[in-house]
Length: 217
Image: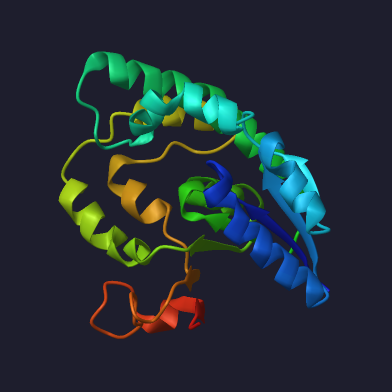
């Protein structure tokens, strides 16, 4: 039996597929811990899973209140100084909080499964303690990440200086600008998507042998 930590971020629709994955893995005999924000805990507990708090509280009320800020979480679409400043503030608050929570629960884990929004933390945990991790997505656009990164590859990351400051406080080495793209890439991935939308073959940016599991329902 393996201890598997699953972590996702966002609102209800971002979490339920991973709760279902955790429920399935636990039914196979594994011990599953959901590292999710406190507002999502009831869904993990209802599925019979262990839950720990990870990230700031984000329920329906909070999501509605902060709806205008969602676009500010896109690291590569900064259009003004005010937006960039708010993104940096969010980054400074949340990265140490999430990393510390994940590190605590992952120290005795066998595997970390991260939603695509959490892949940065999967890479950080692997760097810190050597834990294997898998990036998971429920949307076919996951296969288009490489194209997106190619478009932004020549653009400097506005958050890199801030990120490196945070990394130093967490005991991680400075990350060079030319390593950012590859840093967040997992060697294994889960894509839970209908084959009508995402057929796995050599014509896609991600080769089929990089996918540990594909939901072919």
